[in-house]
Amino acid sequence: MASHLSAYRERLMSADAAVRLIPSGAKVAMGLGVSQPPEILRALGARARAGGVSGIRLYYLLSTATAGETVLRHELREAIRPMSLFHGAIERALDVRAATEGMAPIDLVPTAFSQVPRLLCDQVGVDTLLTTVSPIDEDGNFSLGTNTDYALAASRTAERVIVEVNTRMPRVHGDCHIPLSAVSAIVEHRAELVQVAAVAPRPQDAAIGAIIAGLTDDGACLQMGIGAVPDAVCAALHDHRDLGIHTELMAPGLARLVRAGVVTNRRKAIHPGRSVFTFAMGDTGLYDFLDDNRDFEALPVDYVNDPAVIARNPNMVSVNATLQVDLQGACNSECMAGRQYSAAGGQLDFVRGAYASSGGRSFIACHSTAAKGTLSRIVPRVDGPVTVPRNDSHIVVTEYGWADLKGKSLAERATALIAIAHPDFREGLERAAHRLP
Image (cartoon, rainbow, N blue to C red; front, side, top):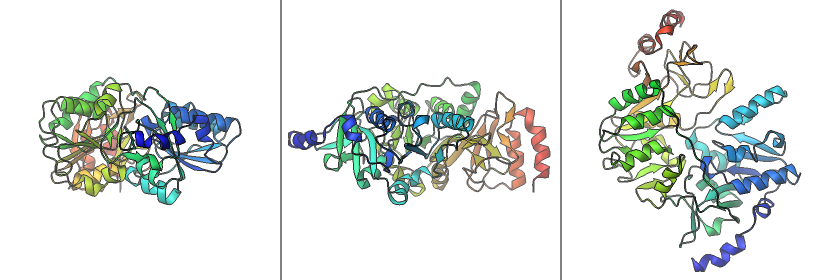
């Protein structure tokens, strides 16, 4: 560490000084989720408000309040243009306000999560990375901690890498380190990491969790998406044995399975003995568990989410949620009521990778209804983008049961999906099915 001290001090500066390195017109990659650096983003937002910088394009996935309160403020849209690759509550709120003022919605860049590193580095050509890291280690490297995803690739191609060193960021093992030599500026700032409150499961979640757990064999390798349904699946898996993990998101539910000894990773074909992930989001207990824990391995998203890599582990089980499933099996997981709600993320990456795995199963889950029971999530035709094409859908699950769509004709698919729709909508769906070509 002593040998790196001089170079470290040369790069150490205030956040206000660090953001002055970012020129107008820069193409900036902001860390995903937990890795969004609060002090750097505060300084960049303040500089934009003062008219010190303009024309910035800000590329990112999964913004949090950290970004929403600083660089993603509505009044800064001219100076800092959000280029969202995955919408969340902040972008939805900005879109509502934009509509009231006759403005265009927030830009969405459609992409699969697995393609984001190449998209940012090759197609967009981001020149700046802003992210949070753990303190430097004895070898002169910073760990990306909770977020390897696209940050590692951006750190290797961007002209400017500006990091916020936070002692609360866990030091994680894997291909997830930035050498001091690649860093342009260092800002030290101790802050609580983003906490994601657990959502109390509803009866529908528990029912879906029990169904999927019942279809999951001992020794399976898990990928879980975001939300109450994947959490319920994890809760229902505690009687299983020798499970493995190869997932884009490491969430508290999966970590609890590791703590309980349910996950051993013994039967994995690649990275045996290690739980593989590309980003983590949860609570302090999760972050503390990841810190210096060699049972976990953080790797870039273009590797973790590569369907060919996913398929190398036998008995992959992929669990993701959707907003709509139509009677032919196509899934819309992105739009509601004509507005962008989220984005594709890594859903199709794992749908394809899990099914290509020997013995693998891909589950798409949803409650049977939305809008307090007034709308069916199983519909004649999806009214948004197709996130999972009908050719790729495998097993669809609601609280009323499951439908394996592989090998079924269009008519057989419609029958199977209607059987797991809410009873109040089945008759209407049957009539609609007869009218479909």
